[in-house]
Length: 257
Image (tube, rainbow, N blue to C red; front, top):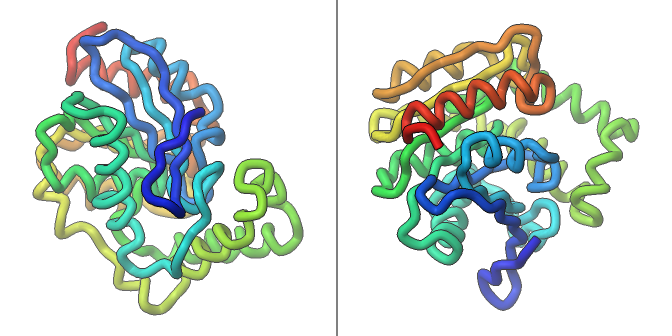
């Protein structure tokens, strides 16, 4: 992995995958407790399948990037989408077509970015993206709190090191705060011009099909797919199926490799 220096105090770790020069980059955006390494080999496999080059990175506060430097606000996903992501694209992929692939928080970030209508954005794929806060989301986080308190999420430390508790508490406290209950990005969906593939597991413990329905209702070119016998992380639970779905969609909107 390589490092992009944002300023004197903050840096972002990233990794690139090779692909054909005439294919768009696939930019992978991880979940709320995730990082580049937690995608495992999925990005490399999808890049190989489609012929596209790829970029994975750790958002600030995650993985090998710098720790969080201030308390999160209701706009934290907007900050990742409208400040950090554009800086990475400008520095690492200038004047380059790309497709965003976002899981959970990463999916929401992809949608927010998509509303900016970048001329280089060719498509968006979301997995378990949120556009509003549901009670099931809060209940899922409360169960995660119990698991974290009893050490059942200790594996996160392998990825986030000393930042683990801070990152977990920021995620949990933000989503369960009374001031975050009104968070909603449905208003920006009609501004997204890029085509969307919207994936969600039928048994997602952090969101219902209302999330998918809202995205499809708001965005103009959205293809929804509900995956049976699947929870919050389709690319981990059913990787071969998700590789098929994503690669077919990428080839459909860009042409075969």
